[in-house]
Length: 290
Image 1: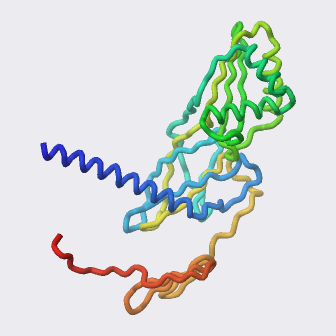
Image 2: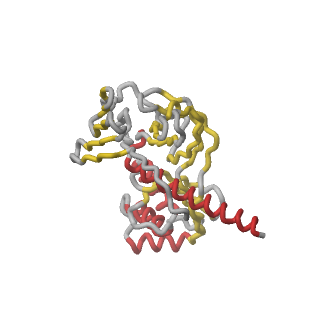
Image 3: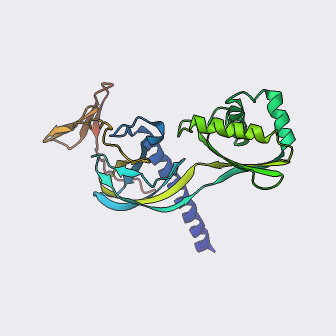
């Protein structure tokens, strides 16, 4: 019985440790400069950063699996590392999740549109975005519609599939959305349509495998996924210049100096002027037996 209780305690300890590690990595990743080395001009072409951690005492090259959320497909995507080198990858899985669905009488929706004055260009889309955000328990304006697919081939029923995503992650094509809006407003006037089957789906998720090459010991390395590839005319951001001597290294943000006497480190934040001394010092002392 005691051994089984120990197993439960070990499982709880492992669960807590994994949660702490995940939170710590998220905190570190939020402080990492993930500005892409190659800039793009279109929001849908914006690079998606992936921060890879290495907890081992030596550099590692391993296969990494990541899940990418994107409104389109990654067929034309490329991955580059911090040196701007292309990294091969393969798609393992691709799926979409239905966030919610509703079956509504056409007359009810038509009356709501008329009551709210949502028949002006763009107003129906905005109303639908706010409704979707409310259904997901999010504030109004936090989600946007990227694409609408309408199928009115079945008798008496129109199926409307709406692709939504958190605002700012991707952008829809305004002219396509306005065209879909007019098509829906026209459906609301058709007496042969009795019901509207409306479903909201999130942007596609793709699981990919790629090789994270030479991730430094006890460190991290950032990779960037360019969903639409990289054009030749895109500009490259200058990498941080790293310089150093025998007991000192520095870049534009920090200076790290090692003491020749005791091996401790002194780190200077060159932006704030803060100086941290006595780092990397280990004190080995006896305990009191408890």
